[in-house]
Length: 335
Image (cartoon, rainbow, N blue to C red; front, side, top):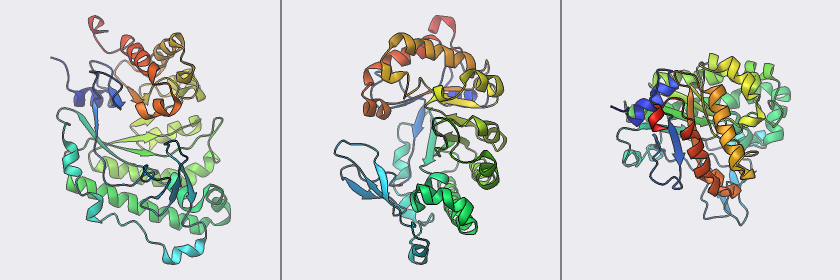
């Protein structure tokens, strides 16, 4: 008897031997293939109302988009001036409206791994509130203020975790959060500063996620090899890496294969935009060879929105087929 979608994902994360490759598919480009993961969102605004060129998120950050639909950029930072703290309206994690309607979003989740999440957890939220340059300078020029601000953000995010956990006990299995830390070459700040300032705060977040009975899933773009062991140490269960080719895939595999579950696919900046089916098939097998441990540790993650934004939707089926053919967990007759 084959495993349920929930079992397949859990066993991959926990290195307990899934019977096939777990799939996290977002969008409608995958035909009859279903995602093993079901997303249940609370009422966060995220990047704002996409029917409008400009929109504010729940933290008061102004998102601006071009005529073509896209994520946009934050052009209005509500705490760019520290004096704005005196009248800033903080997000209230106990506001019942943030969670209204969530129950209905569990529809269709039977047998699946259920996940919720927080967009722009801490570093990204600091940038959004203060502005990127300010946020980086604050670590050196405004240490006390930025520590207070980070702790205020942290307490709000912990409150959101606690509220969701108390409202839906036993119904959720994982929480994702986004924190882009890498440029194409290295971490955005000195790894020593990251360990001093951010690591203990992330530890608190992950402890709260685990206390709720959930796995901790972290999304991070860029070259972050310098902190991967730290993420394992503080309890990150799954790392979402949409740009695997900015990393030394083989070296990362030697260090962390079997210790960290990788959620990824072919590189969204280098490999997929090329449209080269041969290169896509080769990379699928290469990633599985170096990052998928015999007992688990690999989740195939494909987001249709990424494909649409880069105009390579047509290669998604090629990539999906390539990973399924190379599936290290499925019985040979099912590959």
